[in-house]
Length: 277
Image 1 (cartoon, rainbow, N blue to C red):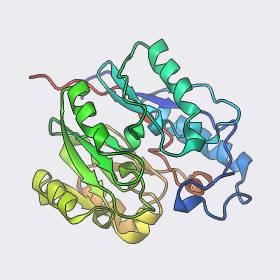
Image 2 (tube, one colour):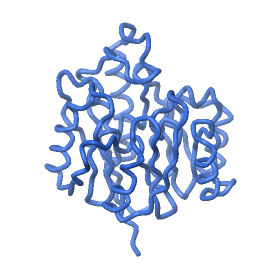
Image 3 (cartoon, rainbow, N blue to C red):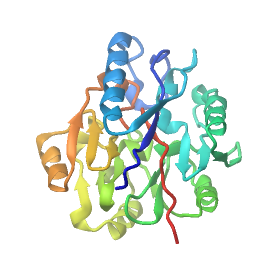
Image 4 (tube, one colour):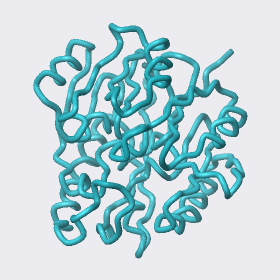
């Protein structure tokens, strides 16, 4: 690791609510959200991450409750970005605000066909060792986006298919970690995708997440160097991560789980150095 700190984009939960249902986690939570607690939890996550990386904030917009989940702003590689085209109508008004933010901050934007569903770093993750991108499809990102991503970023794209509606973006069940480790929940993916993952990540680099940990969004983690920030992890999972050389920091994000998101969903890593060669 160089001395440059990672840069991470977050959006304050000023207008966060759960007042529509666009994933299974949101069902029944429309009235149970504690907004004051959500703001406190978000602040704690921001402050904790800020000890390890530089946190940049995009302004929240009234009427856009899910803008807080900046992982879905787009995908970033070097000075290029692909802004999201949301599948749920409810999130589409966010697109113009995130596109403006990317442009204002010097990113070259891909004009992705509006007809193609693509939900940013929720479904597009750099491997932390190999020169490829993991790209999800099945629920909210369409496989048609993958060729466009590969061409624009000039990177190989490994397509992996989600099969469980609770894990509707790959970042809810799949987290590439420093030095080529991977923390993931295999049942979220179809057979061919699991083979694709296993053929690229050797057994000693795989940290397998069980059903309960996956349900607590353990895979929806933020990784900065050797530190992993997540909502909650069981003792065996923490031990597995420690064995792989990682320090685990838990931040209670209960209110965001009600919207189907956790630590990773609330962040977008802006520093993704280009692979040379």
